[in-house]
Image 1 (cartoon, rainbow, N blue to C red):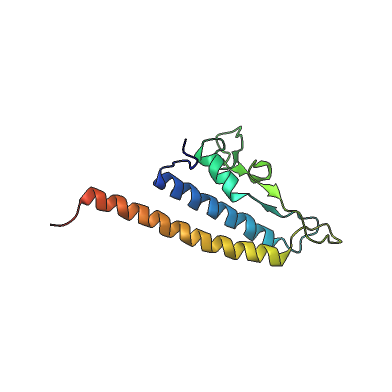
Image 2 (cartoon, rainbow, N blue to C red):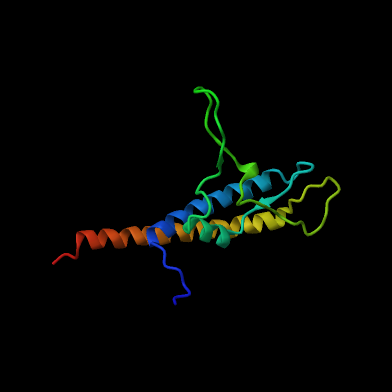
Amino acid sequence: MNAVPQYDSLKFGETSLKLRTFRQQILSNNLANSDTPGFKARDIRFADVLKAQLEGALPATGVSMATTHTGHISGSNTKDDPRLLYRVPNQPSKDNNTVDSDVELSEFTKNSMFTEAALIFLGGTLNSRLTAIKGQPS
């Protein structure tokens, strides 16, 4: 039995890049609301969500909203997104805001580096497939 799950490298790279982008939006939203009273910082467990999405257990996008009229704009409700978790603050604040700017900035920077790595990985996968399609020059 193989303990390492085998995923298509293209699907893995695409899903990873989409999740990294999604997490970047969450972290930037946390940073933007660092002074908002009562704001609760959110985040995802990247590895768990990536695994669940690759196995088809979670949708690739947020929970879709129902539209009752043809003129309504479809959207997603990230408030009820099952991937989002609340961050536990290191130190409580008087205004009940759970954003720690240092933690958020650190996670934002780390996620930026991992996003760049995901782009490089996906680019390498695409280049490998193109080389296989074109073949080697004689």
